[in-house]
Length: 169
Figure: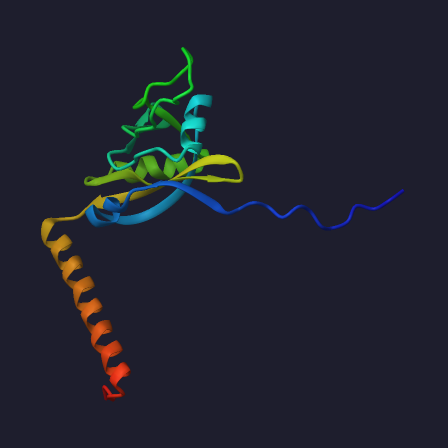
């Protein structure tokens, strides 16, 4: 009787990112993030493997006790037949019941929403990273842009001083 070795195949945990929502971090304060599975049709998976999707306008809403991802664009598969999918259909998100309950309680607070941050493949399964977010005001957005610009200018000045051998102290 032979023993099984303790080794197993290395898991392919690398994320193959398909789409990201860079506007989300600019328009919202991200409170909490979750990784959710997504229920897809076969032609949607094939279209995603081609690397075509847009989640910029997407959001998630509860319908009953289930969480649905809406307004995410996955184009029709080019080689699909009559079994092809609709490009902007509702897609069910797969989360644990405790996570769904936590999200539902948090959504009852005013000004919060659920936005997708990225869509990717992990271990061959389509996943979406969603975030519980609160909308930013315009002055908050301007303040964040100003801070980033100031940080870039300080880094540029320090790099130039180091290049010339000047001490900043």
